[in-house]
Amino acid sequence: MADKSPKPVRSKFARVLRSFNRSVALLSGIALFIMMLIGAADAIGTSLFSTPLPAAFEATEALMVTSVFLALGLSQQRGAHISVEVLIGLTPSIAQRIAAAFGSLLSLVLFGLIAWFGSEAAIESFTVNEFSSGIVNFPIWPAKAALAFGATLMTVQCGWDFVNELMGRHHTTSQPKI
Image 1 (cartoon, rainbow, N blue to C red):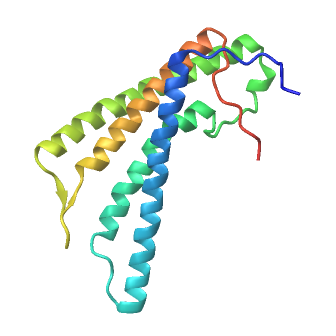
Image 2 (image 1 turned 180 degrees about the vertical axis):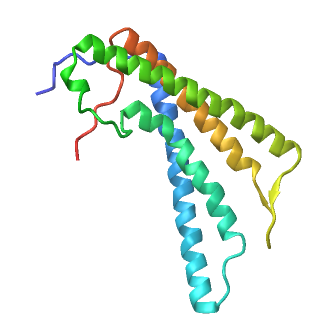
């Protein structure tokens, strides 16, 4: 028998944001997978052939920034960030809503600033064709662009969370407890 319980109404913006967060987080996972392959190839090359993989460190460094910042929006949307709820459970629900809205607002400001300055740094890095020096000159601007893009997506998510908290709507996707 089909479940007849009403589904929560979600706005088109929330659906698009959720889909976009998932797609960008998939790119984060791909960056993490590539990092793993580079690390394995570097370890095998170093131990078996006494030849490390050129630019492995620089590539891993850039991919690390990419994997972290591109996953922030989905993590925020799911409410998967670490939170300490020792005292908040003892407060009235209105205080909990105010605290959640204030937290979302502070996160919006912080990640908005990271996105702003990160964008400026990425544009400057691209303009001057910035590379890390080494055996292989590795471009730095893609990592800076990923940082700015991920921080921008996180800013949008925090703004959406802030609006939802002010309106009294629970915005996070329920996740199973582990």
